[in-house]
Image 1: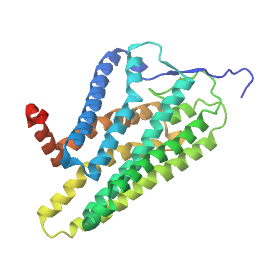
Image 2: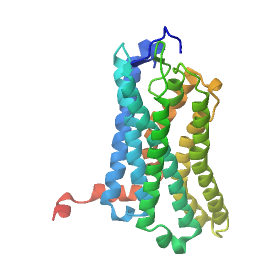
Image 3: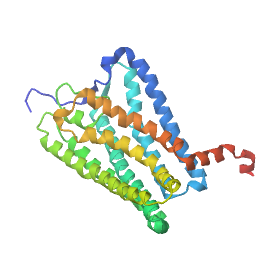
Length: 313
């Protein structure tokens, strides 16, 4: 590091500065999406809480996923909304680190949680007679806890290492939040080791759950194809369709973002893919799990049609 370079005490987001005229419109759009996402996931959590028919392992994991998605989008969007209304889009180094801790922990936890949900569907379809034993409440708690612990331990270590780097220069982040690669680019030292570690973590902790999900669904597909009746095959597949859509959305953008080499990253592609996994995907999950899930729709209908006076009595 050169002697005439000073360390950054704050960062400045470039964000959507090139779309100055459209920022008020973007504010309204992202605010609506944010409120819809938080409200939709809250409805799913409350519905599963009050509907006894949804007290199953699959919906236990869905409660975890909905809570995670609310925290996930809240770690990014409120700050982005403020920056769409102000001219100076700054954040302290400590604030940036806090945002990265929360965002990366939740992202990796979601990877593991989606793998646990795939395992639940595998047991339900391929080992139905042993489902109650293999997916007991104790097992579900351990799977959910393992997902959260993995996210906290791995990403806390990685983010801590990133913020031991010295940051200097203009401190401009070519992004709308403190994502890993845009922040690493601001370091005034060689970051090749960080990039190797980032790639290794991506392969181990993002691809491993992905392989578990793929292997689970390969076994599920084989089992479904062996079901003699078309109605039985449709029913079995319908229990997995919502999860498959969520996995496709999440992993499609995650793999595109974190398995690229550094040279392939550009501010435009980073922001476009980040909008997908920070805003669009969390907003689509409540829709996917309500409109495409017969049990959730039936439970919602029963709850909304229940007589409030009879419930109090």
